[in-house]
Length: 232
Image (cartoon, rainbow, N blue to C red; front, side, top):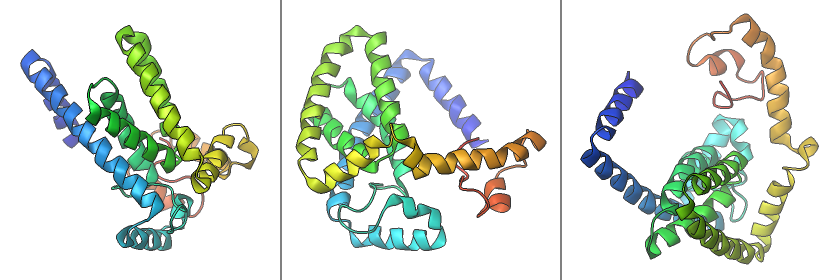
């Protein structure tokens, strides 16, 4: 019931103009600080991972070998997950944060956007990269007043990206990830999802409504490259 109750709460808040403005302002301020803090921590984590993050990586990789895809617990060797439990959760939380930060003015939103985009790139979550690009383009086409701001923001971020690419560890990490877009045959992640989807077709055709929450872990753990969060 929690999602339904929360959805009803949001609906009732957004139907009243005063409450709607207050909620939106609160969300924007929260995500500005969130993007700034999570982004800065993520960059520090990539350069010099704290002991507790190293311990988390070692423990989770032992319990669930599939988490080996987040890299090695050493400087410049991991995929940034910042304050969260993994790169995917972190990156997909940062996506709406960056979209909300884009249309804000001032130095703090600019710093938050730079830190957030830097950490998002270092997370190597390609789905989140594509999501941000699509969201920004949609925002620009829906409201032309953001066009100039988006162009300037893109230029600043481009300069930051070029500067980051001068560092060899960052360049190696990002180049290999960008190249995977055009070289899917050697992309382990893509191939795992393709083979896993092929394996699950029979199950989906026999149980179109599924078998309840936890089915992937209970019935298919170790039998397919797919995880419980890969797809419906």
